[in-house]
Amino acid sequence: MASPLPPSPVGVHVRAPAKINLALKVGAPRPDGYHPLATVYHAVSLYDDVHAEWAEPDEFELAVSGEGVEDVPVDDTNLALRAARLLARVHGGQDRLGVRLTIRKAIPVAAGLAGGSADGAAALLACATLWDIDLAPEVLRHLGAELGSDVPFALLGGTAVGGGRGEDVAPALARGSYHWVLAFGHQGLSTPEVYRRFDQLVPDPTPPEVPPDLMNALRGGDPYELGAALTNDLQPAALTLRPALRRVLDTGLELGAVGAVVSGSGPTCAFLVEDEEDAVDLVVALSAEGIARKVLRATGPVVGARVVG
Ligand code: C5P
Image (spheres, protein in one colour):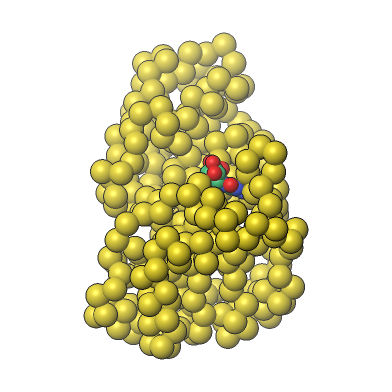
């Protein structure tokens, strides 16, 4: 439970990673509208930073800067603010808590990289630390699931299998560190819209299962095997909504990537390469093509949301 700590002048700083989906298998919509998933999440070294400071009781404030800031809502729909309010309500005891949150974004908005979920996860952990609310990781993840399907994974990090609507996560048996090149789209994609398009394209999907070849590749730690096993059921839907992504994927493969996949609901394209040198080369070559808004490299897996500094 919350203890009446004196306000900390410094506050708490939490860093949370972006995710890509190495596999994303999607079933038919459930009665609640969500789709059952069998996915393999992979946290990569692209981070949003959330800083939390004490505020007056019942005061919940938010300031955002960085990548795509003009598209980030700063009202009560923001996942970081919702996370703070949820934690205060459920685990704040009798204390009237408040927080001033500052988000510095590097993960683009509506990109299929779970940037909003990273912010929600980071805010949960930052507020729990600031308010001295001691929760087991699985309790925090359970709370995260109320905020969004990808929030529990943003807390867990690493490489993990996701079931349910994505919120039910367990670490995967995975070996090795992988080098990725991420190509950001010029315009975001709406996740609900991509799922709706999936429903139109695949009216009768089979129940989702994690692909065994992908799990084998992860156990072996070989980038070539992993590259060949990358798969995303939402990719055709994302490609019909953004046909230009086909060229981005093809170009990355022609330029030497060992695998290419749209991440989550897109539009970010993730390219797997053999090593760091190839990643540097692919960033330069893809950037020169002028077909992506921004191209950068990342490694994975990395840990989930953590207090830093
Ligand atoms: O869980 P989250 O709020 O991140 O989901 C955003 C939207 O994505 C949902 O409202 C839903 O339209 C879609 N979604 C889905 N099935 C999932 C996850 C998300 O249909 N498993």
